[in-house]
Image (tube, rainbow, N blue to C red; front, side, top):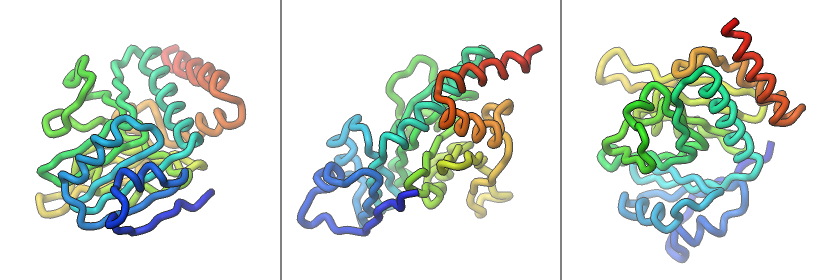
Length: 234
């Protein structure tokens, strides 16, 4: 596994946008003491540019570049979930790496993929989301083949994301948000074997599906997964 390049830098000579667009694949850079307006300006400049993920946590701004391998796993998981939704007639909405941000919490995060399941009826046919008012997705996906996203889990917790799927290239783990017993204790993620949003899926099953995709390709894997879904109803 290639180790991600990580720096803490100052943007005195180059703008955040210039630095973001010059980073090599599978690299990350962190800036401190960044204002919320600067973060939003960077998001506006980057737009829907692929290959970048931007995180913001109370003044700390991280820019991360991703590889084609990274994107392949995220898109394949979307195909798996879409196959499940069609076969089981479940309304599941896919919003890719939608930027989840809340000014009042000074938090922002872009997952590699995200899904609305239980809260899909609330979103309905919306194309643009406003996370100041719209609920967070029920599942966020992090592909960690070249990076480790666990340090950013508190951002997801603050934004109220109930579940994270993390794939490190070897195994997929499911992390579900556990609320503290009182308002003082922060919410944190606990590793579970079974998905809360899609209880028919387990970490072991998803790991096996991803491994099969690597060995046999996407089509054979999706056909086998669909057969398994059909067998559950027999």
